[in-house]
Amino acid sequence: MERIVITGGERLKGRVRISGSKNAALPIMAATLLTNGVTTLSSIPHLRDVTTMVRVLGTLGAEVEFGEGTLRIDTTKADRFLAPYSLVKTMRASFLVFGPLLAKLGRARVSLPGGCAIGSRPIDLHLRGFEDLGAEVSMGGGYAQVKRDRLIGAEIYLDFPSVGATENLMMAATLAKGKTTIENAAKEPEIVDLANFLNRMGARVVGAGTDTIEIIGVKELKGTNYSIIPDRIEAGTYMVASAITRGDVTLEGARLDHLESLVTKLHEAGVEIEGKEGAIRVKARRRIKSVDVKTMPYPGFPTDMQAQFMALMSITPGISIITETVFENRFMHVSELLRMGADIKIEGASAVVKGVKSLSGAPVMATDLRASAALVLAGLVAKGETEISRIYHLDRGYERIEEKLSHLGARIERIK
Image (cartoon, rainbow, N blue to C red):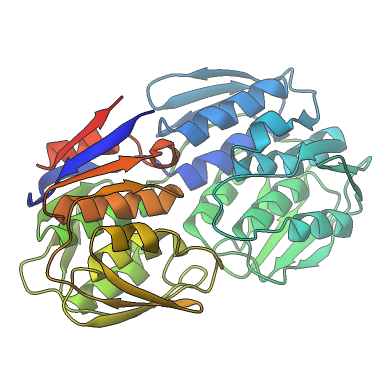
């Protein structure tokens, strides 16, 4: 099994190119199933999750060519409606094919999803929305099944602004008859990117980025060319990497407007951040101060940055309280940070972090995608050598992270 080994103590300096957004690419790849033609997507990151979605599309009959940062997807023969357990269990985003299959084929049978074990992420919001659109929903044998001749536009209210449910229902509604309104919709930049892509294919979607999205159904969508937005979570991770090593790193291609809540907290901690000419420069010259963080749906502080920010606070003087409100089981990285000498106590949905003078390198184990990134960040500043196992989690969301960090001056390598 592959591992990452880091010798800490190096100050990161230089420039790093931010890859295309994984969380935008996956739903957009699923949305190509709404067409009967060829779509070319660019700025696609080469990640394990993207490879899994390529396999899912292939299972459904699509022909996919994966080049350097580019996907060519031909859905002309994509007429299968079954997404099997063998693929969906490895990545929750596979469930996003449900809406497109239902809209285009009138039926879909998709295995219940897997993904990171960071807490309960029920699919009832997806299925209830499909029922609102007129679909018949049934469950059995570990699969969810829906069918309908043609969906009918409806008013849908989400009990929680779920990103996945918003995306699935938005895609399903593009080919429904009449108008669909999604209230309490998720507002993430990835939602906006999906809406822009759907509109490029001929859909009529307005309001993405607000809590109310309206979709006027059309008869058909056509293939197109589209470039994915940069990955704000990868960008945020490198911003924290610069801060934790007291570095000076410029992130090429990152968008400051997608990172406002994180930027606010880093500013509060004393980190210097400057955005100009399609790049973000992050410097940590002054003494970092402890700050409190509470995760919230976008535009609040992202749950996908909580673990990385905790790694920063673990070596910051003072006490910070980090509260997780999105997922109930997203402190699994704490036990591994404790192995490295961190002083963290969990109290319900909050972690009380008392900054220590230094961390010590140790063998640690990644438990999920963002936890693995936090361990990498901790390893960058720990005294001695840190060995991280189960890095397949890391490969789900970070493209060539050891190469990028190495170019910035980190002593890091991947070992088989």
